[in-house]
Amino acid sequence: MNAAKVLDAKGLACPMPVVRARKTMKEMETGEILEIQTTDKGSRADLTAWAKSGGHEMIDQKEDAGVFTFWIKKG
Image (cartoon, rainbow, N blue to C red; front, side):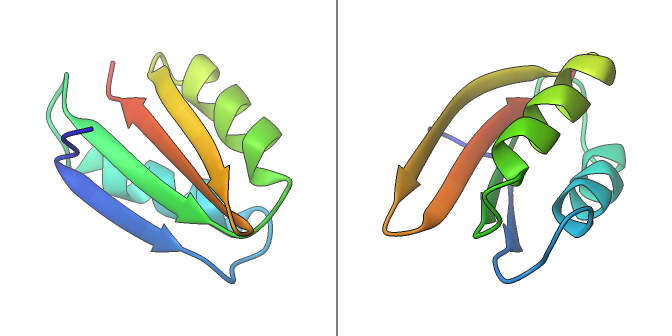
């Protein structure tokens, strides 16, 4: 996945991954992809809901060794 920006939110608890994602997304252009890495299990639901409510598209997500990675396209 070709992300325009990568946000390392590992070790941050809810709601900080969403807060950081929102701040980073504001600096990006429409259509660019933000890659977010977290270790908070709640991020799966939180980031999915945030992307939908913000008009963004959750392109993909995966979990590997306790790290959740999300790719969100700015809408």
